[in-house]
Image (cartoon, rainbow, N blue to C red; front, side):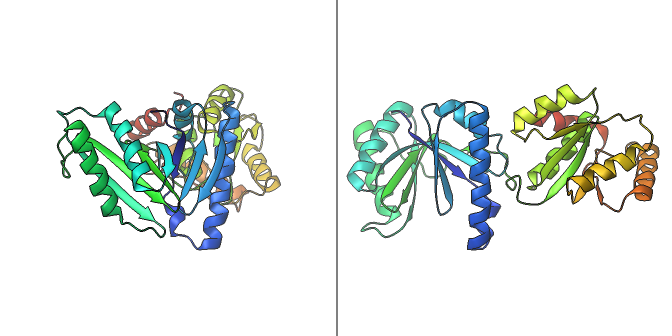
Amino acid sequence: MRHSIILVRYGELSLKSAYVRNYFESILIRNIHHALTQEQLQGSITRARGRIYVQTHDIKRCCRVLQHVVGITSLSPSVETPAHPDDISAVALELMRESLTKHQSFAIRATRTGTHPFTSQDIAIRVGTDIVHELHAPVDLTNPDVELFIEVREKKAFLFTEKIKGVGGLPMGTQGTVLALIDTPASMLAAWFLMHRGCDIVFVCTNKSMKKLSSFQKKWYVGSRSIVVNPRAHEFYTTLNTIAADHHCDAVVMGLTLARPKATFSLLSRWKQVSAVPLLTPLIAMDEQEIRARCRKLGVPP
């Protein structure tokens, strides 16, 4: 059965007030649209409470893109159907015929939002009974081979068999602006940590790091704001401070670590002399082995 829609879930946004959640959702939708446009993918984006829906003709490629949009915790390629037990059961049978054999166990995970003449348990029993009758597969609610998820939301139901993990965090652009000095892979990792907490990033890089930064920006669908500077120039840190002020940055982030204490303390001392803008160092307690491992995991260019 052809999946027609992607359910997009977010985490921390659901804890916010209605006004703040609406604002954060709008930013996340904007970021999703930017990522799809960058990859020349066509799709329509809608939302309901607690969910964002992306409809596209290229589900697999779109899922790969959404996995790199900060703020998304998980996503599921789904089949949409009217919220009626007969329709839900018919779609469930088609899905399970494709992914389940009689030698595999299954479980139904049903949830429901809105007012309906049935409960989520009613749906689980109805669909589970039909699958057992048609496919002769055993039920195992504890450790099933295949899980079928059913989300009934108002007048529609969405059925899926997988939850693809996203990167999580807060949508970029919801938590202020930070200047990131990019001169090493560690500095890109440091910038990523601030992106993951919702910050917009103004990138300052050297000619040497420009190509790797471009690859990093493309992978994580970050805006193309980047300024090239000469790290050997006189009063380099004063220049950074001026750039931060010109772009209304709330802070500066660098990839400093106590694994190199002499260089780190020297730079911190110089920065304190030229700037009142806070200097953020998210990697400060990491050793070089951990930094390299995290860079590999996130696809940061070596």
